[in-house]
Image 1 (cartoon, rainbow, N blue to C red):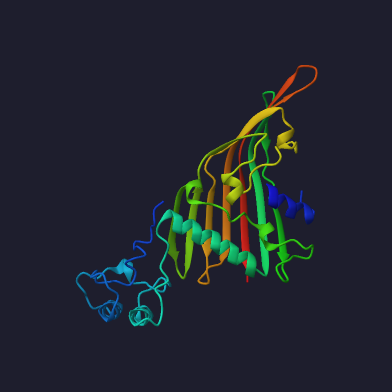
Image 2 (cartoon, helix red, strand yellow):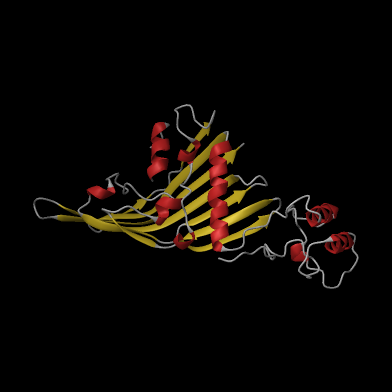
Length: 281
C-alpha cells in the first residue's frame, strides 16, 4: 500500500444511478419536461397531503434532505427564474467517478483532521504450510495546518489517489442519503505481475508492495497479484467533500522465489485488505 505505508510508518504504526430520478428530471414533478411554478405548486400540494395525479415523488426532494416540503418548492421557484441551479446529481458512470475524484480533491484541500484504520485478514501459505493472516487493525489520527500534519505529510497521503477513470470501473452508482450523497465504485478485476505496477488499484486504492512476510513483492522471482474487484464507498457532504471513505480490496497472490541451490519457494495469499477513513473540516 504505497501511500498509506508512508503515513503509517511515519507515525510508527507497523453502474446504475439508484436515486430514482435522473439528473435531467430533478424538480420536474409533473413530468412535462420543464421546471417551473407548476412544479413548485405540486410539491406544496404533496407536502400538505393534497393528492396530485401524476406527481413524480422521485423528482421532488430537490435539496436532498430526505423530505419533501416547502423548502423544495422554494428551490424549484428559484431555479425556474434563474436565481439558483438545481445542483444535478451525477447520472452516468463518467459523471459519478468525476464527482468522486473531485470530492476527494476538495477533501484533501480542506480537511483539518483525519482518522484512518487499516486491516488485513485471510490465509497465507509457504510451500503448502497454511497460516492465518490474523486481523490486527492499525489506526492513525492526524490534524492538519495549511494542509500538512505535524510531520509535514499532506492530507492526500491519508487517502487514495484521485485518478480513477470510467474504464477502470465495473460499476459506479450514487444515491441520496439525507443531505449527503453516497458513492459506490467497484474497480475492475486486475491481475498484475510481481515485476509490474498495478494501474487501476493504484489510481483509486492501495495496491500491494509487500506480502504477509514483509518481503517486497518485486524481490520475488516471479508471480502475480489478482485484485478481485475492489469496492469503494464514500459519503460526500452538501459541500461536496468526502467525510467517510471505505475501501475493501479482496486479493489472491501467488509468488515464487527461486534460490541458487535450485529450490523454489511457493508463497500464496488469499485475503482482504480494508481501509476506513474519516475526514473532518
